[in-house]
Length: 293
Image (cartoon, rainbow, N blue to C red):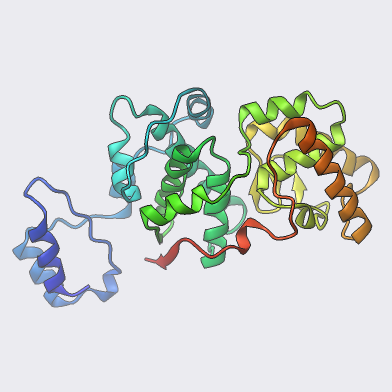
C-alpha cells in the first residue's frame, strides 16, 4: 500500500475512527514511516488485534448452547473485525456465540489438520464452518469468526458480504443441528443413522463417504472435518463398527450404491436434506480470496 493511500484512508474516517492497516513490515518504506508520524498512526500488532476482536477463552460449550437455543438476529454485512465488535452489544448474544464457535472451529483446524492451509484448504474450512451453523445468519457469524481466527494465524481472507449471502442461500442441505440429531436418535437402525450423521457433519455425498479409511474416521473427526458435538454419539456407533468388523464403507461401486440406497431410506424416514450426489460441496467455485500477511 502506497504512503499516499494511507493518508487518503485516514482522511476518510472521522477522528473517532480506529483504523487498522495490516502490512508486512518488510514492505514499509521511509515514506510510510513519515506518513505514519504525520498522521499520528500508532503501531499495532496481531496480539493487540486479538484482544480487540474478542477473547478466545469463552467456553465453547456455553457458546454452543446459546447458539442453538437463541433465535439468531440479522447479521450485519460487515467484515470480520467490525463484526466482532458490533456483535458484543446487548441483544446480539446469539451472533457473538456463533462467532466464537466459528473461531473455535478454525482454531481446531489449524491445530489438528494443517497450520499452513492453502487457498483450497481455507475455502473447504469455511464451507464446513458455514454448514455446521443452524441457520443462514448463524452461518455468516461463524464464517466471520473463522476469518478472525485465520487472521490471527497470518491468513487474511476476503469475502464480499453479498457473495457470502448468495453462497449460503444456494445450499439447501440440513445443518447438523440439535433437531437433526434428535431425529437420528429416533431412527431404529444405528448403521444408517451413523451414515446420515456423517453426511450431516461434512456436507459430503455418498461417493466421498465410500472412500473413507480407518484412519480418517476418528473420535470427533471425519477426515478434515470436525464432527459437531450434537452428532458425536451417533457417529460413535460407526466408529465402533469399524473397529469391530472393518470398514462400513468401501470404494467398490456396489458398496457405493448400497450406501446411496441406505441414505435414501433414511432421508425418507427423517425428512433431512442430504448431499446425495457424488460431487462435493467443495467442487463449487471458491468464495474466499486468501492472502498471507
